[in-house]
Length: 227
Image (cartoon, rainbow, N blue to C red):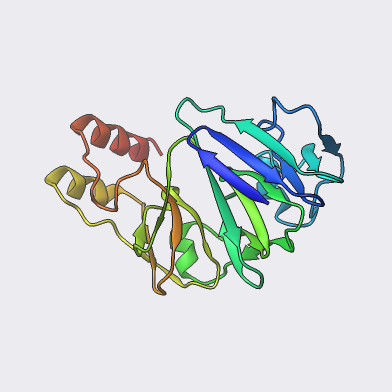
């Protein structure tokens, strides 16, 4: 199996015996598929997959007897596809919001639950985890990057090896306005303690680098005081 991703389009080249499951909204122009009434890996992170529409009525493409080329188009004006390969024996967290599809040879999917007190700061306890070998097609309204940085805003993170350790830190202000924002903000930054590669979106700035307007600060404070 080979995937070529070019901005808002992707082409999947399936060899004889390959199977690929697509999110229903992704596979719109390819007619040769079967609808999965029983989702693949039905007990694997079902709630998150239901929320992001990659669970029910997935479209299955089989390459039997010959190879197949499947072309897909994105639905965001400036969307981007990305192919993620999880090696055999590894387990990677994958943000279900970005899952456009995955191969039939995916070993397993499960929900990884984090009970450590640090995750009360993250406000994240449930992670969708894909077990390798697996090939996953990701889709986002912005670009993807593979980076070895150790600090990220939570909204940027797409995938990482689930065995890596995380800790919360506060954003570092870079201007008087961002300092005021941080006083009232509940946002935390995810910092990886272990080295490794993280798949992240590119449309957010690095932690603490955001340029905030006075109006943005006022809206943020108004949102807090309303409660």
